Length: 231
Image (cartoon, rainbow, N blue to C red; front, side, top):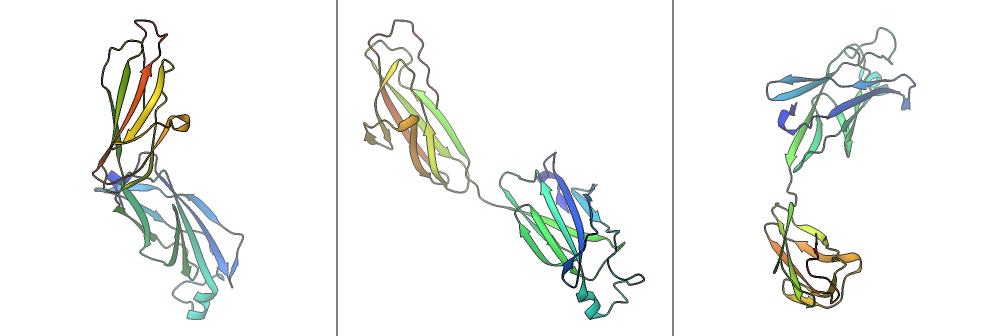
């Protein structure tokens, strides 16, 4: 069962069924896309394998324990376009054992060969904290003359529930400006970062940092020239 609100519109779930006989993967395989059927607030997907690797006439019920160990069904499920902001997903089988999950793929190995049995698989979503950054930028004056100093203030706020690490802000000054200095939370530096990339570091959850950039309008800038700057 997959909660409807957590399924992106282009979500797909594909499957591949293979068999192991005495630990050797057989060439016979079955693959396709799991049809998702709306069931109340959820979508449900069911796989019914049709290929058969065990001896003719064998069923799960009439196999001995040792025979079930000899024949194993391997089912691989792969999600596409499953990323949902703020959530992580975990595959869990209702009818299976030895599930191995790697990223968006889950592989189930089941004792015995099955045919015509519905394989019910459950995928649960768990909320995880993620950082959510917002950036606002202001300037101390919208009208300046040649030789004046302008100061840009950039506020980076983390509105998420997890710290954002290694945060950078890219701000390339207009060609009509000459860099003077920059400061982060009041600590000033006159060294201009290469490529206009300013290192902010970690922005804690619920916190904000303030970056300021000072620059001078070049002396040869004509009156009425528009100066633009974006971070």
